[in-house]
Length: 247
Length: 193
Image (cartoon, rainbow over all chains, first blue to last red; front, top):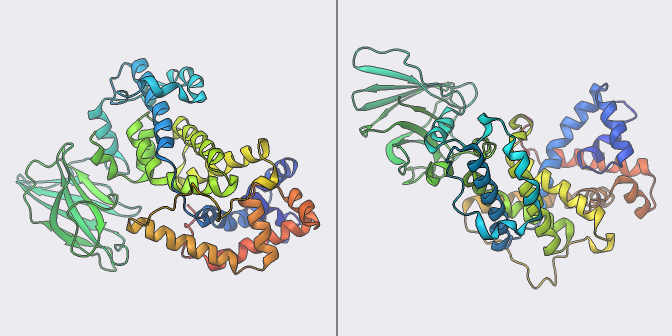
């Protein structure tokens, strides 16, 4: 791949095993050597999976308690500083000073710009829905039908057509579900548990799918799609890959 | 937001909430990756106490630096484990003598085997077995330097000194070994972003 004399540094580099001086030298070298950058890019994914080779060991439950005590405390301080009243802080309190890291935290967090501070629960919901390309736009339809653009994997487009209480998803450029899985549609209303639908579907090779949702939307404010085992699931078992918000 | 909604989110989406100071989102990130993080830390330090310290430092660093996660550079899992790896190396180089570093698979009375409770855990065990098999299939001189470098936290010059081998040879063995692993692990590795 590269005839560069520094090529062999790429291996120790991705493992974090170069000495300090060599690390600095190779970092500078990488800026001007395309061959070595390619070597690093090729080897980095191997380094990234190495930790998975470690025998699996459960951390003690007390470790989570210690970490979360610090986190809750700092989140509460952050919420108080911002005055936003986020859902951040009921725990805090007694256990929060168990970590020495706690005392270093306060000043930095309070200094965050307002847009990085906790926001009220309702706004958080909106933030989550907005992840991806979920800009909700009324893009068409007659008097009775409304159409909302949604979000999906890179290169996919998702439209939700709503006619009275009936929904239909149109997907373009959608990848096929992982092997041994089908896609399932869910209806979400506020913070309630997602409602499973009988809308199970696969995507043909051309990436197009038109999915009628048999259940009435019944006040749902989001429609989500997840990959599930054949036959569907009563509750989602994976993260949404596509969806749209009704607004 | 109800916790059930957060559980629907992918790691990358949760990290956006973490960057805004959401402890529940952070808790889910911890629950999803704590076992892998602790396993790596324990494998590197060889003792539960230092491994706990490494994981605690790493996750608090992640909580405080959530906004620095860049999804274009890899998955959250890779990022988390990278933070743990760096913290463990710091601890190894700061606190522990080299002959205390190696984690042993025997004689650890307080060891907990992670139970195989879910499909995800089963898949990860399978993945771990594939990676271990691929490591074991390497020529011994290549697998040894990779193990010492990654899990031992040794620098290439320390390894060269330890094995009485030229520095250039150690570097070359590491690179060749990683290239062979890449050939064996194509299905396991993440595609570069």
